[in-house]
Image (cartoon, rainbow, N blue to C red; front, side, top):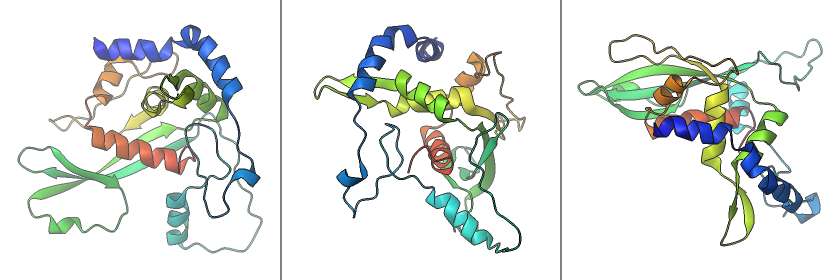
Length: 223
């Protein structure tokens, strides 16, 4: 099956890419603060070259929460634990006749779903474990390819996202057409099973893109 061979390629290409990875690491040039235009915001990205990282969505949510307690000492949580989970919630609109998804967006946006007379609204959630620096470094190495036209190494964002799905998607609220929850299954390594990967790949591209974009932004993997 094409999907299964794709997973095998993702999870077993270390030996084939070992020489490429060494070349990539030696070719990387980290920008210095002096090289960054003061009017340009350098955002977190998949290539590892960044001098600033922030989640504007998470910052906005904190502001909207409106909690303002000055009592006591506030200590930031810097380190990612093995049991840390991040929940991505989305709003979906679907055709009440065909049941097909017509729109998907981050939950909480100022959208009046009641105005869509012939559509129905559904709230869904996707639970991820949180990748740490070691995880992302490994995924970047495995996802790095050379552009022959320019001779430069580039992180393949599609491959990197496949790693996030296979290794970090832990649960979701999605149901089949009979209303029964589709349970995700895992291998001993912690990766999604082949059957579950096949289920994930059956999702509309728009839903996967929205969910992963929200996840990447919330946990500071991208802008």
